Amino acid sequence: MLELDAVSYRYPGYARQVLADVSLAIGSGEIVGLVGRNESGKSTLCLVASGLAPVSVGGVLAGEVRIDGTATAGLRPFELASRVGLVFQNPNTQRSGVTATVFEEVALGPVNLGLPVAETVERTHWALRTLRIEALADRDPARLSGGQAQLVAIASILAMRPPHLVLDEPTAQLDPEGTRLVGEALQALAGTGAALLVAEHKTDLLDRLCSRVVALDGGRVAMDGPAAIVLADPALEQLGVERPARHRIAGEVAAAGLVLPGAIA
Amino acid sequence: MAPPSGNPTTLSEADRAYLASLAPQAASPYHALNPLTKAAIATIATLAAFVLGGYVAPLAILTVLVIPGAVAAGVLTRLTRVAVLISVPISISVALVSVFTRAGATVLFTVGPFDATAEGVDFAGQIIVRLFVTAMALGLFGLTTEPRAFVVDLERRGLSPRVAFAAAATLETIPLMVERALAIQAAQRARGLDTEGSLAARIGGVMPLVGPVILSSLTEVEERSLALEVRAFGRPGRRDQLWTLADDGRQRLLRWALLVGFILVLVGRVAGALPALP
Image (tube, rainbow over all chains, first blue to last red; front, side, top):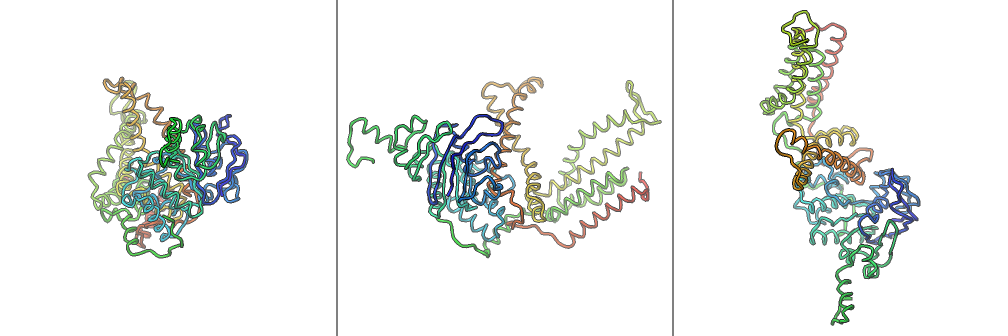
């Protein structure tokens, strides 16, 4: 379980709190969506939930972040890495720069974990297969499109098989097919008992994927509830978040006083 | 697709063959030497050239330790070109400073208040020879060794991956910065920045790019550092690498021989037991 208990956070050198009194618990097998307008604190919450802030980033954290009951504050970065994975938004900065092929890039995490080669290879094949990017295995990671690079970045974290996963806009550079594959991979991971936090602007993806959605506004939790309810709430749009197409269409239809046979719920 | 359970302990033949194919492919017997052996040759050649001084000793080191390797690797012409390109700008500075500022009894000619002395010419010549040997030795290492091979080999020998990464990342950073500078330059030109014309105009046009290139590089370094942290980069302890590089008793012997030979030369020079060659 991934838990944030009354967490407030500010970056080093800044007086302003980017997160204020955020409490959140993500149970095993649960996928929680995180929405909010730009600079609402989504990326910071991802860093805090993964323990990297303040452990690596610095700054001041009030409250407590726990991973399976262990406070992140006392853990070193490599200890965090084996407990929770973090996928960043920019695929280019996630590339190690020390590998010549996608296969080696994806295998780097398992190698760093000290796994035997046979297990590293098996995990790498699985991660590439899951995101259907086996064909990229021999390519130079520095010479991929943005979407391909992001799939490689996600595969690199999947191959480490972290018990829990935090993703900061993982599909920002992906086409619909890539987005669908990432969604399937995340569902598969949740099926193994992982707790997942997914920050996304694509609410249609969250609608398919998440059981719960949290909306941030100015670093505070503005809405928190079942995905079907939060994503259907018109108040979401006042937080700068576009609702999923099915809810928008349903709203438009209802506003027009129409009732369609077999209407979208 | 659910992650497979269980921990496989053996590699299939196909996987073995695939992993072997990932290792850098050697273009020549010299390329195939272990990176540490090539690094030892480059380092000892450089240090010995500086310790022995003169002309004969550095040129002998070049002839014995560097040129045969360059010929075997098939890179002699390219290496010479690279070494000249690297050493010429520094050599010009050395020559200007040494020829006109080194005190000496034999004045060759005078330029304003400066005397060009034969002693200064000799000193500059010796430094330039050493610089050229250094450029050739290090250039041969660079042209015949992939950074990732050096990193993997150093890690296998127990060096911290952070140190190994720093070495590889430094080599990686230069082309990345050039790429970013070109992207920023193209974006600024699209907004009307003039980077053509006279030298002054070009310098004026490039100056606004310096800040964004450096700042974005620094930001990227921080993000890359975090991304490496989440991949357990800082974990202490051994790692089982996907592929390893050949090393053998003969190479180990060569490395020890180079080290012992250099120590003897150093002690001999310090103790005055080795005569100074011209």
